Length: 622
Ligand code: UTP
Image (cartoon, rainbow, N blue to C red; front, side, top):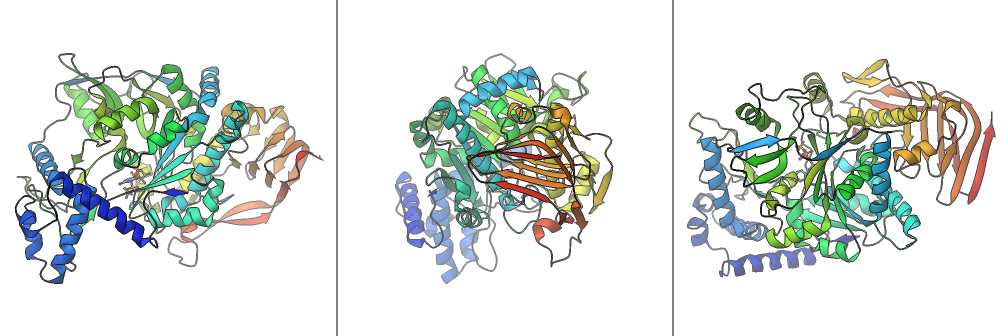
């Protein structure tokens, strides 16, 4: 594993990096160190010094020096940017004034159609030349889980965590690419952005599991830093009264672009032959179902930037991808417009009713899910020019009408999907979208169960650990059903765990080794009408497996290790299977990863077939 910010036990290395950063920032200002006059004068932060006497002051100056080195242009630039953005926020300036929205260029794909298959086929030619970037620096406050989100099991049948599934998906794509290119050494790389909140635990997780099978150097870790919290419109920093230190907050996932630039990642990836860079989030268990086809759309349409999107319900708290054209026609920008800005923009321009559905029942503007595919070539040029510094925003919650006081400290933030704002000088850059059904591409785990109940009532999406898990089973059931397998997908009953509905339906896990495209999964069932799976069943298919005839009523797990192949010629399974047993959210004796679902798995009886012998094994047990 390559690690651009060393681990804690490598304190010398950390110190070296810090010193380099400090030296660079000092050089930029032609100034040799952070002194009190500078803090009081240029930075306007004298209040910090006044409240930090003696030893606390030294620690404060050291912290300010470190923060200065971490922000492009130093803290003076941070304060200046903050003042300007806070002034605009106070005025209530509309960033899209003078722009008219239109639906951008893009493709709307439905799973299991010939159009989808074609995109997947094109995508499969490209996946070997793709680098993946996982943004995983978020604290996950809404979920409230004490570990890191990527360590949570995606689903508890296999208990494989999000990061393991992402690594397995990339390795499966790599295996297919090695086969099709004949290049046995081809590497599909992964970069992970961590933060102070997630870094150590991410490194620990990877170390514990030997990088989930990834090769040395295949994973690059980039750690983002926090920025000072701000208490007023003058950009004064918040201070911890006990330590005298500046309070800091996350700067947002937009940091990923400056880190990619700063670590030289793209140069390395370019040398490896990477053509596409895919960004995705920490807890989207469905994303790899959609990515191959979406990369195919990027390639077919030669998109510089392609946003994977879902049909958006008007009013839904999901941004819409819009093409914004200036009134004089001189500027055009395709970008995510946050949902709270979309309605006023539409009212002021296209439609006095604002954010309303079209004849499809959805908003004409595709819903952003923060999965982005960039063409490396153009991205590399833009980063060289801009250093990847994404325009920031500020979102203070005001405590008074004059907008002079904040309810709590705010900070500048930046979002990775705002990258197209760096393309304004490049009118030829092609920015578009690929829309897919939600069940094919998006299910996040963001909310604790209590809040999820409210979210479900409001938006219709719980985005909890249990909904994330059940969306995986739902996706696999639907794919099997589309293939012709006899499995119930509609009119399902629900059980309730912690007030959240869980469908009573077959729990199906189809691992990346079993299938990375819809076509691959379809081809695994040559006679789907001879396959039936009852509602109380659970099924895990992992590896090179062909299912010709299966009657499943219970629990079945089949694993074919690399090099082995299992052909289920004829198999009837009837056993006690697996059941979900309710657990109390507050029961500390239960693993937190299970408690946040409200259930644990009780394994009554299973049929397990593990095949590691090379060659074909036929299962014929009618
Ligand atoms: P989320 O919207 O899920 O936010 O981030 P969050 O910060 O993780 O969770 P809350 O808001 O505290 O509940 C979307 C994606 O962006 C990453 C997250 O890890 C997630 O993959 N992210 C977010 C970062 O990498 N850095 C950040 O500063 C913020």
